Each structure stands twice: as C-alpha cells, then as structure tokens.
Amino acid sequence: MVVAVLVVAACAGGPAPEPDPLGPEPPTSAKPEAVWTYLKEASYRDYWKPESTPKPGIHRSRPPHGPLIRNYVNEIADGSRPLGRQALPAGSVIVLENFTNEPTLHAIDVMVKIAGHRQATRDWAFLRFSPSGGIRITDREAYRKAKTGNRGCVYCHGRTPETDFLLQPRLPPLN
Image (tube, rainbow, N blue to C red):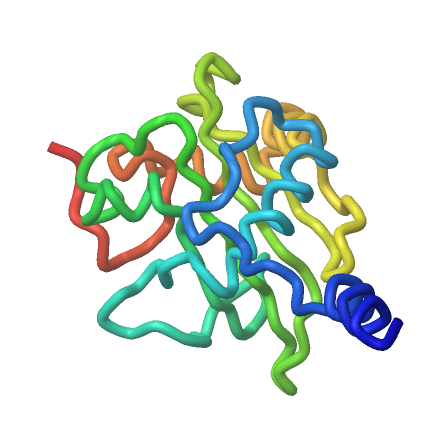
C-alpha cells in the first residue's frame, strides 16, 4: 500500500519536462494568437540568442521603442548571421523587449518572416504585445499605419530595405 502511494505521488508531482531547446515550428500566420503561442512555447528568453552577440543584454534605445531594449533571435535568424548582411529566411523571428528606465518590461515587439506574407514588407509581419501577451498592434494595424499615416513599425523598418528591414546601425548593408 505504501509503495503504491509513493508511486502515484512520484508520478503526479514530478518536475515538468524541459522545453525543447530547438523549440516549436515558427508561425506560418501573422495571427497574434499564433505568434504569441510560438513565443511562449519557444521559451525565447531561455533558449534564443541575443540579437547582439558581442554585447548581449539591455541597451539604450529611442522612440518608438522603450528607453531600454533587449533583443532575441530564433535559431533560424541566428543561422543567418551577420544579421542584415542578406535577407533572412522565412521562419526568422526577432523579439525586441521594450523596458522603462526602471527597467520594467512594458511591451514586446515581434518581427516574423512568413513565406508569401506580404511582398511590400519582404514577408515580414510586425506585432506588438503587452508583457502578458495581449495584442497591442496587429500586423494589419502596423501596415495600415504605414500606408495611411507614414508612421509605425512598417514605415520605419521599410526605410531600410538594404538590411532586410532590420534597424541596427552596426549592420552592414546587404550584398
């Protein structure tokens, strides 16, 4: 009887399995739910590389991002280093965490490259989430803001086609 109780207790209360370090398949849709689920399942903070390998961590930034930022890239984007040298392949995902000066995380910006998504953005989708995963800006909204008001994610990133829409002064131009 005691052995049966111990076996049941061990099965019920054991540690959770480790997430797959290679992560789930990247999203094939710009739907916010699909992108956020991918980020959660990928455990990007634990497994992804920092965007800047020479200087990882929190960096100073400027609007429209927070005064402090931290970037991550998934395995697909990481395999295309140096970022911005050539167009990143479909499945590339870049996360930019926006912090206040304290630093407190206040928004999560995501660029997802989805094959066939939108020619005008070279297949990049742009989204902004709250730290809890609520959608603040959908890809459709980001694209609309660029087309109707010359503002927002797509507008600014669209001015850097030579680095595949990546805004980073240390990136060399595409060949």
